[in-house]
Structure formats: structure tokens, C-alpha cells
Length: 281
Length: 313
Ligand SMILES: Cc1cc2nc3c(=O)[nH]c(=O)nc-3n(C[C@H](O)[C@H](O)[C@H](O)COP(=O)(O)OP(=O)(O)OC[C@H]3O[C@@H](n4cnc5c(N)ncnc54)[C@H](O)[C@@H]3O)c2cc1C
Ligand SMILES: Cc1cc2nc3c(=O)[nH]c(=O)nc-3n(C[C@H](O)[C@H](O)[C@H](O)COP(=O)(O)O)c2cc1C
Image (cartoon, rainbow over all chains, first blue to last red; front, side, top):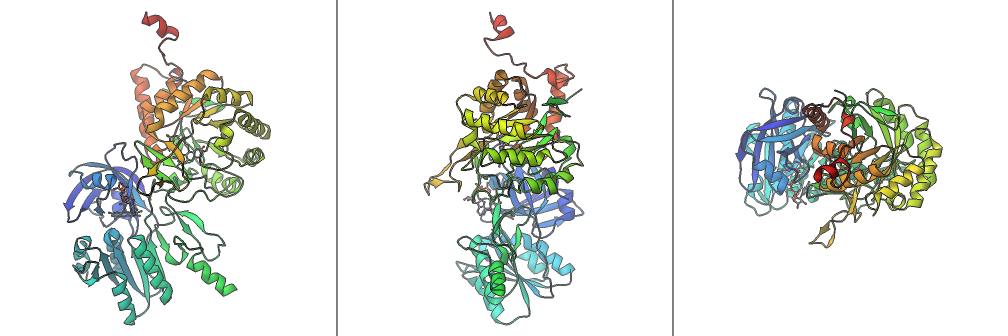
């Protein structure tokens, strides 16, 4: 059950390129968070900016009752959090949202992360490992500074394939290139997971469509409340049995969605719907 | 110490009500906060049919406020009665429903659906939504249409009828009086202020709908002024709305004559806001040697009026 709490910053680690790792004490988040879930959090109580901001839960420590965020300062809300001094106060509600579902069959989980989109996958590889499953992470960004959460994965023995657009680490170019290369090598059955910029998620969804693989994407629209009441974060979702797409809250019905049910900008219908109509007609 | 108030024959255990569109259907907050803490809740606006609402972006932050164009996305009155009302029955709080319509007849039809349902304390008539092409503000901005909608709903139900006034008018007192004459039991005051935020790089509105409704602390002084004008104009109770996020803010509305107060945007910022505001109200009453919140209502000493005028000489 999510809980709303005033929290204090327990630890703070400043990384390169406006990234920071923040740890807060929040027993419910520490105990219950699942991979892909997020918190709505705001530094202090200032009226500007008015609202809290959504951040994926990177890691939890149930013993210390803490959770950590991997955050990039991009605007006023994230900067205020990144600048919190140790002991600094924040308001936080969580854990929120629908988590990633492990592959329904025995297939391998292929996780594709862009920039801060790596955050939900650290909990996910732990969940997979507990279930005796394996996974592989494809981690992309503009430059090496965007790929700072690597060590925790390799420490768990997870293979992590980096890709940077400037070639400063791993493959030069888009992260979907090493993903496709891996799939071309004919591994066993796979399920794709994506979290990152819209264009990347859409590209992963296309790979999944072409190859007939299941895929889950963690969408990140603007969010106002995180609990399904402001209706500001709605995304167009269309399940196979729905003739019309519906606006659904990414905060409560997502942020993780079956990629085939997403109606991407400029598209008339979701893949799941198009397939259902083809079968019938 | 008593925090109980009465609005249109409905007893509320305290004067705090969750505002329409900022609290979902109430059930979203189950588990996050104790709904029985609230004096009442007002549902998101409901038509007869489900509605999809506006395209995105729907909300943009402004200095100490929000501009929104949600466009009344909702499940429709029949689904609310079937799926939501039974779940709300568990809580000791008054449930008001925000009634919408494209036509006068639709308002009355929604009112009839709700009048037959158990667990509805009253109807708030939304004649002030700025984010729909038909109905909404178009009705609440025209005294004749306001009268027509309120009278039609009045005829359709014996539930308390509470029109929600638009701030996008020159003389809010006139509209409050029109509602009173048409048979309203109370008025809610105010809905959001029509606004526009421009993305200067793209030279387009930031909201997909174009314009939107402004809410939050940014509108409070305007809302308090309008609630004060409405309260002076009518005998029926006025429910104050606009930018409340603390006991101080709620007290401003009570002091200018409101019998109850709605909290909107603050729900998004702080789901636990009610407990904090209630504690603040009790603290205030204690400090002022009062044991009933009603003793604060309408106690504004306005310069040039009443006792204050004499004491200034
Ligand atoms: C479910 C979810 C999980 C998230 N997890 C993380 C995370 O783990 N780490 C992290 O650093 N960030 C994460 N984000 C994004 C983060 O919420 C935004 O960066 C933050 O809200 C920006 O707020 P701000 O006040 O700093 O910037 P603002 O002033 O609000 O925005 C600054 C700039 O960023 C753009 N922007 C704002 N929000 C988004 C968005 N959602 N997607 C793309 N561009 C945006 C704005 O258009 C603007 O150009 C997540 C978002 C969601 C919805
Ligand atoms: C996102 C959002 C949605 C709203 N939806 C409705 C609605 O469905 N019906 C209605 O009468 N008012 C609606 N309102 C207006 C609020 O109920 C309230 O009148 C207004 O926001 C001012 O109060 P506040 O400053 O406390 O938010 C909405 C406001 C917001 C911010």
C-alpha cells in the first residue's frame, strides 16, 4: 500500500553530468517497491514549482528502510531535489504504479535502457534472479556520462552492453543496434523491456513487432499527482478488444504497459488492435 | 471544540471538502488517507456518458498555480452509481456529485440518475468548466442560462442543489442571486480562472486545448474576494474554493462568510493536507477562545463598514 510521508535525505552522491544518487528513509517504499514503480517527491514545501515529480525507484534497503533514486537535474523540481543537503526534507508518496512483469514463459529478459531509464532495471534484475531467471541489459545514451549505473549490474553478474552516440563507451550509435545484433545471433525466446526517451521506446516496440516478441515499455509522460486523480498523465492505450483507444493514466494503469497496446503519436490504432482486426477480418 | 457545519441541510463533520476534479471519485485515495477525515468530497464532473477529455498536454505549472484543460474525462453517471458509490458508503463523509451537461436536459437527466442512488448528499452543478466547447462556462457566464440550468435540476431532484459559480464574469454577486432565485440550496465559489500559457519557442499554447483553467494559491485573493461578494449577496450558504492549502487559507474564506471550504490543487501537492488543515483550524479556535468553527463565519471587519467604521474615527 503506498504511503505519504515527510522524508529526510539520508545519503547523497553527486555523479558526473548533472546526475545524482539520493537515498531517503521511507519504510513502505523500502519494503514493498517492485521494479518499475516510482515515487512522487518534492524537496521542501515551497509553492514553486507547485507539484511533486515522478522518479523510478532504483534500489531499496528494507533493513535500513531506505530507497534510492538516480536522478538527472533537468529543471526546477529535479534541481531542488539534487541540491538537498543531507538531512534535508522532502515530501514523498509511494510506491506507485504498475511494475514490470517478468517474462510469462521461460524466455530471457532483454532490458533496454536510455539514460536515467536504467533506474527501474536494477530492481528488476534482482527480481529475475530471485525467480531463477536471467536477463541482459542494453544501456544507451549520448555519451559515457549518461551511463553511470553499470557497476551494480556487473556486480550481480548481469551482462550489460553499453552504446553511446558519440562512441565514448561501447557501440557507437543507437542502443537498438546491439539489441538487434544480439537477436540476429539467434538466442532462445526473449521478452523485451524498455525505459528511456520516447523515441527509444518506440524503436524497441518496432523491433518487438518485427520479430514477434512480447515487449513492455515504461512510459514517462508529464505527471501531476501520481495517484490517478489529476488526469494529466494520460496516454492512448488500445487493447485488442477495444474499437477505440482510451486515455489511461500512466501513473495508475502504467507506467509499464504492454508495448502492443500503446497508440504511438501519429498512429491510428495500437498493434494489438491491428492484429486482432486482421485475425477477425 | 466543534468543527461541524451545515450546508443545505447536510451536516458535515468539518468544513473541509475535496474539490471536484482534484480528488478523482474519492476511492483513488483509499489507503493513502482516511476518507472519513473529510467533511465531504465532490466527485469529478459527470455527464450521462463516459467522456474521453482533451488531448495532452493537459496541465502546465504556473507561478504558484496550475493551468489545466482536462476536459471532464469521466466514467459517466450510471457507472459512478454502480461502481463507485457502494465503495464510498464505507466512509463517514458526505458525497457530492459534480453534474455536467451539454444541454439543460442533460443536466436534469444526470441529476435524476443520481437522485435515485443511495449515498449522494447533494449535487454540485458545474456551470463553470472553462475546458469544454458546450455547456460549462457558456452556461455559467449567462444569467438566463444559469437560471434555466439550475431551475431544471431543481425540478429533477429533491437533493440539495449547489451551482458552482464561474469567476469569469464581471459581477459574481448577480450570478449568486440568480442561482438563489432559481431554487439553489447553496453555491460553490469559484471554479478556475480562464488562462493562457504560451510556449514562446513554438509560439503555441502550452496546453493542447489552447486555453485552460487557473487554480492553486495563485488565484486565492481573487477567489476570496468573489466568495465574499457572493456571501453578501445571498442568504443561502456559500462554499469557498480557490488556492486553499492551509488553515490560514481556509479561515480567510470562513471569515468572509463561507460556511465550508473546498480544497483542490493542494490534493495533488500533498495527499495528507486535510489532517494538517484540521489541526490548524483547531489551533486557531483555541487561540481565539472559540469552541465552534461557525463562530468565525462572516466575521470580517471590512474598512468603512459596521463596527469597524466607528472604531476608525
Ligand atoms: C514514471 C517516471 C519515472 C521517472 N524516473 C526518473 C528517474 O528515475 N530519474 C530521472 O532523472 N528522471 C525520471 N523521470 C523524469 C522526471 O520525472 C522529470 O525529469 C522531472 O519531472 C522534471 O522535473 P523538473 O522540475 O526538474 O523539470 P521541468 O522544468 O518540469 O522540465 C525540464 C525539462 O524536461 C522536460 N521534461 C519534463 N518531464 C519530462 C518527462 N517526463 N520526459 C521527458 N522530458 C521531460 C521538460 O519538457 C523540460 O524541457 C521519470 C518520469 C516518470 C513519469
Ligand atoms: C485538474 C483539475 C480538474 C478539475 N476538474 C473539475 C471538474 O471536473 N469539475 C469542477 O467543477 N471543477 C473542476 N476543477 C476546479 C476545482 O474544483 C476548483 O474549483 C479550482 O481548482 C480552484 O480550487 P483550487 O485552487 O483549490 O484548486 C478542476 C481543477 C483542476 C486543477
